[in-house]
Image (tube, rainbow, N blue to C red; front, side, top):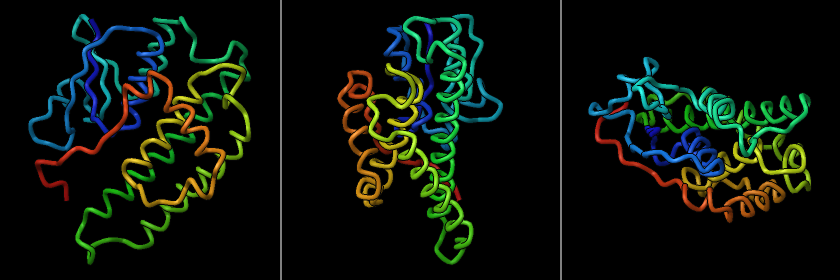
Length: 211
């Protein structure tokens, strides 16, 4: 059986968990805090990042976008990508956009963990611009569609739903909902799906210092 090493608030890991659920693939969930000294993550991923998918033979697949490619190749039904090439590329582009928003937020979040006198305001402002610009573009792409790409639920919706869910957990006072009501509506609709309800993110506590 597959094993997924995951961090509970991680939007990257949640993407994989949702895809596994949507494809009805059985797996064992192993929760870790990758920053803690007790983590086994380096044993399976030399980049020391989660999520990591451990295969039955003990080998590992890592980086969320590649894990999703692996799952799509090995477990093609139901498909998480459109049938046509342009649709596939559009869905991947949405995933890149959403991952970029998450990357910028993680960098901003980590900078805020430093003592205030050591924080770089220009660095924080740059990450904030990435978040704001990324969400504006995601809202433009979403428009009033039922699905971000094509005519069925898929990877683009998973990516969009996990980034908005992550912001709701990690940054509840950030006013993205008021700025982009169509994204808020999309997020609320996605969170009603079983795969989203079963993977609601929540913060973890760092046992070790990270700065």
